[in-house]
Image (cartoon, rainbow, N blue to C red):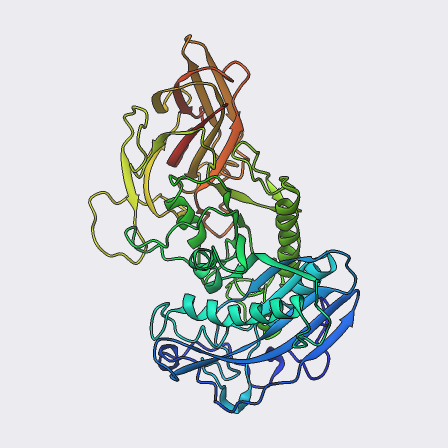
Length: 541
């Protein structure tokens, strides 16, 4: 077993400790190839360690062919299984799938690796698998490094199909061991694991594949019932080619605002899909200071940090691991107990300003059949209210074209938004006004971002939401400048970065249950500007 903050025992060293691990940039040539495991590859012996009430089995289950052409690509089926030593009931199953990164110690993508020196990113997640096993879960951590060799998702083979084949073979062995006497894992598993469904926890490239994995296994022997991702990689460069919305299962993404690998991709991906219809939650939590790599101990042990300017003051590897352990525990607890447990599931649940003890800003889909979108800057929602707001579009920073609808850049700060917004200048008397007619209203959800740094250096941009009901009565919600969605994020010597986030609140008592006919957004005497994406009103049944 690999304890939470210790070096693994001899014989199972993390690959980062192998001499010659190089954080060099991937080589282009090997990113177009795939794994070529020899037909006669000798399997590694199964190794089982038991400590702190947890069995950890490190297994090599052979190889499977992937791709369309017979015999061209063969990937190993290896990885970890953790399980509580004691248990009277079958443990719920978690599949933990790691990132894509050069899987060989020389910084290349290959299988077999030169000198058989490889980076085992599955072992880099053993701390999380062990912690979850202590809490009653069975956790499978497949080694998907070899099948992630190609940069492309579809060439020279489909990586979703390859993933489902490799991980599917692993789970087939788990099912055989839990229903019979298969000894592949070196421990007795009969009746110990509920493999009918699994919670998927995915990092980076694995998160990008998650939606298609859910669909592929919808009717399989192990259904993916929920998805939690850390720093998922999504296509958001072109609004016509954005990664599709995740199927309707509970979804949570966490992303650090210092991530240099997939900066703000999860936020902009969900922001693109806010108008979709769902019954299950879809949330992205943005966390200050966190990066991409340090949730995987194979990378943190080698000092392979994607962040820059992090010599001091940034969360270290221990903080990254603590974040992921705590968030995964809260998420899985929420799923099992069907309660919010600080991660909001219901469309009317408040969005907490901290995840544990870490500040967080949320982008949240309104997963309610009683939702009415009264403003959608993308124009895709039907039945919107009437307004005079002017829209503009934030394009990918590398898009050089001079689009006539391109949003102007702020004087200071960076708006990390993708797609259409309304640029709304707020004063005490003016801002945005949307005329509508929504009955039995109870809550409002606003998705927006500050439009750059405040020139006056104030804490943020205060916002007043004024509601008019059918009888002509008005009432207001006052949202303070310190709210995570409105705060000025500039710090001495560094401009702020601003992404879409959601403010979700119950309506004032005077408006609750009434028919809302107008929603206005106003500021105060200090002014301020926001980029407005969407406004939802939620009604009672």
